[in-house]
Image (cartoon, rainbow over the protein chains, first blue to last red):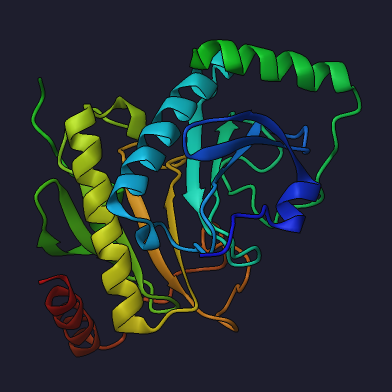
Length: 136
Length: 136
């Protein structure tokens, strides 16, 4: 089996917050909405149902924990959780905090407009720290 | 605890294919793409992480099984799985078969254009039968 290697586009569009048991937890560089990307460190996976049942159970526990932490940290109206992968095929799960009145509410974030990178690295660090604390 | 009651909009936009252990498996009435909606029969839930861990495990197993069956029946390029719920708050999971060249490929289906109801009830029945067979 090939070793896991992060997809180049995911690597370019997001930064690592923390390694969980199975997933890399990453922050998408788009300040329009708090947008996390979770990537199971397993090679050759593109669909959730391709994972072993043990890995699926891990993924599901990690996604639930991250979703709850993101809700707690942001006070979001709704958490959006999705495995889409029409463009980047490496299995990844989006976990996004949505708010009434955000730039595309109540429509989806994918394919909407252009990413607005964080202007301030300190803002990212502060967010990541809060999230890590909520996860612990 | 209140009894589960299907959200009126989900009831209007989709039809029941089969009751699984936890979820109603439903077909969205939109012939542009094979679009399933899974609704855990639990009252008052809007986020996956609000479910008990037992129910989450059930949901995850059912979603994986349905996703694999949908892939098998349709030969889809990619299965899209998502819990969004910005409009309808009752917890529901979308499981959608996507194809290169479908009406909004590779963009998302949510918020795109207008649903095109199935013209032919027999087409729906045939699809549902194939899916139920793949699930068994």
